[in-house]
Image (cartoon, rainbow, N blue to C red):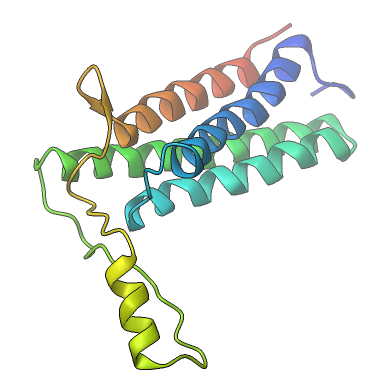
Amino acid sequence: MTAILNASQRRARILAFLVPAALLAGAWSFQLIGHLYPCEMCHWQRWPHYGALVLAVLSFIVGGARTKATLVAGAAALIAISGLIGIFHAGVESHWWQGITACTMTISGAGRSTDAMLKDLLAAPIVRCDAAQWTLFGVSLAGWNAAVSLVGAGVIGWLLRRRA
């Protein structure tokens, strides 16, 4: 590998940042603006994107083309992992298979009375992993995450391997 990234690899690095950033921005927008609260499996899909963002940012900071390319490849792998989790979650929502978790909510009880915790528990939204809260063209948010993540990871991988 050369001392600097070629044009395709630079595009891959930019995509490795933009794909998880856009998907996380969308997820947080749906949560904070649209009041669609994530279930446990939704959170599972976010964690690889957070990791991919860290690796993508590092690829802009550290020196050496080989290190940069390795970080971008790692980001692509994490993006693909989120996509695979999205496929699993979309399948659970579509009742193609059963999920492996009971959807739960967490209420902090540190230093609080049982009555206060019960009120919070009753007021908290119940979000099920096996029911899509929102769809576009019949595809849930988990399905869209899967599609965008897997295509994005594939394009990043293709760009990394492409010669200038």
